[in-house]
Length: 376
Image (cartoon, rainbow, N blue to C red; front, top):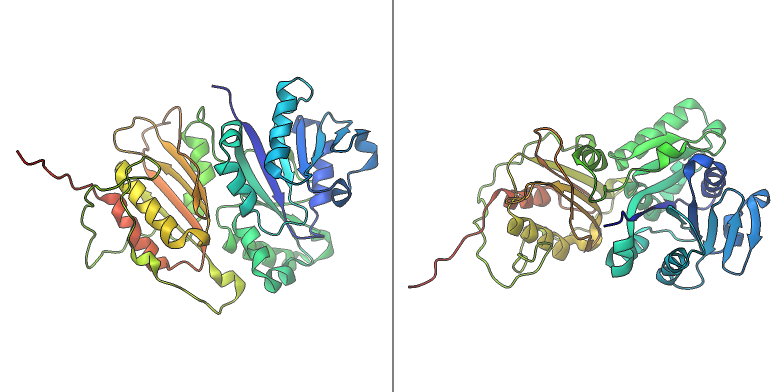
């Protein structure tokens, strides 16, 4: 099976430096042949000396890259790229979506996950959020959307650091690290960042191995990664089988204390939390389905990112799972383990999440389904 094309999503508020970063990326020969998808060419501001040919929907660049505008539907734009690629009219080995005018990257991530044809052709290679060192603190204070963009990032690019003092830049860096503990934070130099810092931070493909999956999950970076699960006064009983659905097709109807509603009146940053857990024993696929389905039903809209590397009982290689809000990508089975470490790792980044209930819910991953014996 052919490898899926990597896709990188570049987001960030107006004036943060997305256009400068994109132009620098398109000038870098080491970036390869990139298809850039934007809302409107005029919004992106491509450097004129990069452009060699323009049509209504496509701009060809001197670097061998191209820029495609979305005339309505993102799915149609992406499918059109692949149709022209299959026909030999275009050649690219990576797609970058620049989210001009879009505050929330979640809808694009939903599109990539739920559209069957795109899911088979593309894989998310990372969310890159550009944060302006000069105006970033005020932007984060002004609206939750900017905080959410940071929390969903795999890579955070700190721009315009030459306009602030080193101590101001360091304070913002610390704030970003608290919002997105697992994200890589890099500083742009004259708006540019080395290609290696921007690419290769998404979920590995099926030909990948455990080390890159572990780097993607980056469980040790999260605040609760080293904490044991708290003992439960009433540990969950094994679930009986029933009507099924879920990732492995095994989950009965969800039920959980995660349903508890939360309506905080706190600083925007305080609404973001992350939980990371490591499991030493294999996880039964049914219990994973139960937990995932419960989490989605109870808190789906509040799950900004879910990343997991799972050692599933009965399988000899690990699975990688990625989710955004109520949409979970089908599990990707990796080609191999590396070394003797076969622990499962789960990371959840969310807003307004009941932390203790979430930790408690993870206990179900330690249980086994209850099997009913058939009457003679």
